[in-house]
Amino acid sequence: MSILGPLLLGTFLFCVGIYGVIARRNAVLVLMSVELMLNAVNVNLVAFQDILFPQDAALSGQVFALFIITVAAAEVGVGLAIVLNMFRNRASVNVDDADLMRW
Amino acid sequence: MSGADLVFILLAIVCGASAVAVVTSRNLFYAALFLATSLASIAGVFLVLQADFLALVQLVVYVGAIAVLLTFGLMLTRAPIGREALDSQNRTLGLIVAGGLFAVLAVLIVQAFKDAASAAATGPGPADLGMVLFSTWVFPFELVSMLLLGALVGAIVLSRRESGESGEGLETSVPLMAEAPESDSEESDAGEAEREEVRA
Image 1 (cartoon, rainbow over the protein chains, first blue to last red):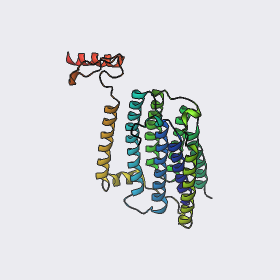
Image 2: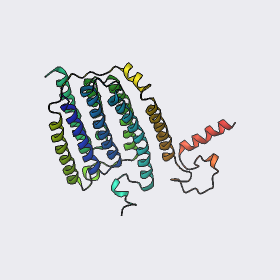
Image 3: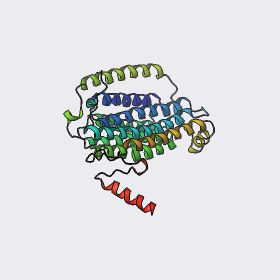
Image 4: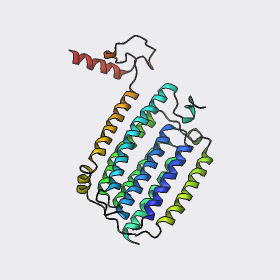
């Protein structure tokens, strides 16, 4: 199986995530788009590991994908806590409204 | 074209379509469900790539935990419905940036890897992954577990309700040890009762 397919899928998912981060206003949707981008990187790592470097004894690609899944779980936990605090303080989760530190 | 290629193409179509639906759907709840679909089909992609353990972890962590957590977040923040409320003004800017980046990256990837060896994916079993994880990668593993612990404790601290907040402005100086909020919510009453029981 060619490596082009997984790499192009990863690229597509990453760009869709970038579009979501830029174009969405709801903070939870922005978090979802960040998840899409992290998953795109995971697809890339696993594809490189299993197609291009199957003889790598340390299994770097899959182990890094595992670590990224863990970090993504931590990120969603903290991110949702921040979003809930924002909703509690100003009754809105629009990222446009959080412009207190805007220059 | 082998069977693995065919399955991969189907999964990639499902995954890409539902990812697009995540960022364009008007209904926030549908967006969360499409996200779960997309993540589940990525688990299928992992299976095609012979990464069995990662596929299961993906299903358990992403579809089982993160999608549900995001759904909770949507419900707790009473999100509005409707495209104008969900999308900001820079939708065209987002399209330009994402489209341009995709074009550049796709051309680069095709040029770089078009004559790479297209071997059959041969993944290690879960036993190999476990051995490597607890021998070569044991220090990063412990580090990332400490990171997860710290992040979860931080999430609890962040989302804990401070005393007097969101109530009727109870400004009584509550001592630090008994900081169960004496506001209106029932859960704090339950917590008080529980604490009384513990004391008794």
